[in-house]
Image (cartoon, rainbow, N blue to C red; front, side, top):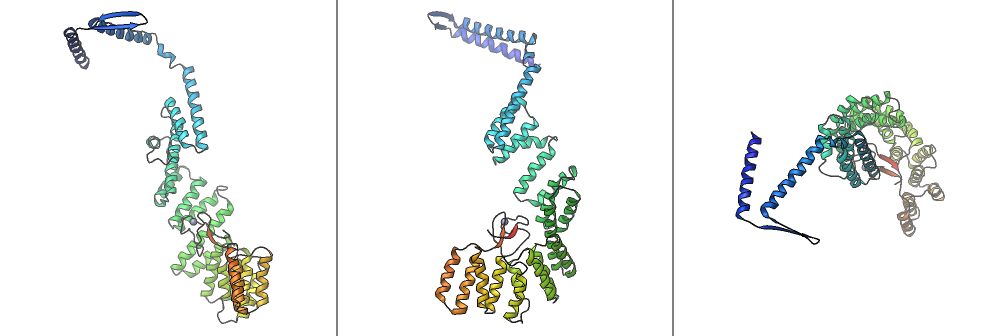
Length: 427
Ligand SMILES: [Zn+2]
């Protein structure tokens, strides 16, 4: 029926065309290299129609001779695949060299030859993602197919993590874990995700899964993570009034990581609250061996408010012998000597640092303080303050990701949000 309509319309158009030509007579004149041909318009139109018919007949003939076999021959297809493979190789090379625009260019060449091939689509989706485009049609195509589910999920997961959308990342990780339950990378991400959602108990059970999975996480990192989780659980327990639970968790944290001075601080404070200052002292002694910090020193010096400055100095002197060369030890000793007006001892402690080229701002600030307290020499004091400005930075809490400098250790950096990146260090 459609064909018939088409032929009728065609016949009408030809008739109208013929009528138009006969009522508008004219000539077509062709001149080329001295040759000249003249037609009437009607003859020219007739020739054009015949020529078209001839071309169509030739195409039919070639089809009948199975000429297209040439285009679909195995050799030709193989050659096409090889070329596409080369394009894809170049695309991945550009991707590796972070030239994502080039990666898309060669990826599209490969796509022109291979069509909706999954490997090509993955390359295009990855490169488009790296270019930061709002729309990613290649990823959308992959999402619709079910062959690349995990790969597509991982792309989505990376996006969610870079946006820090932890609550949306969590169900996705859990779904991926159903297919790859022992994947160390996924388990670790699950752990990190739980910490960001403050779900410490969940984080702890993920760590247990990780520890059963030999080799999927560095044992040292596993221990550190366990320590931090126990520390977080301890703070939670303490806030809920469960003191002994909190105490045991902190003990476990320090067992896993004796250098964890924030846990040592909390552990010692727990003893102080129970008025067991001797045990608190022991905790500080242990922690001082591994990682002395200013706040531990402060806590130690202020343990007994009624003791004399000389008594405090004697206690501090015993403490710093645990780790004598550390600047934290020298500074603590000097501070307590200044308070006890033991000027030669204070000066000695600070000069040790200067002689060993380990002096920092604090070293000169303490020297300045001494000049004021001992001799009321404001000029000398001012000179040390000028020196302090030019001196090295003091050791401090700082984030290994964003270099923020918080006053205390926190499990998450308050500035960038990263987990367990706050360290006591020189920046
Ligand atoms: Zn940070």
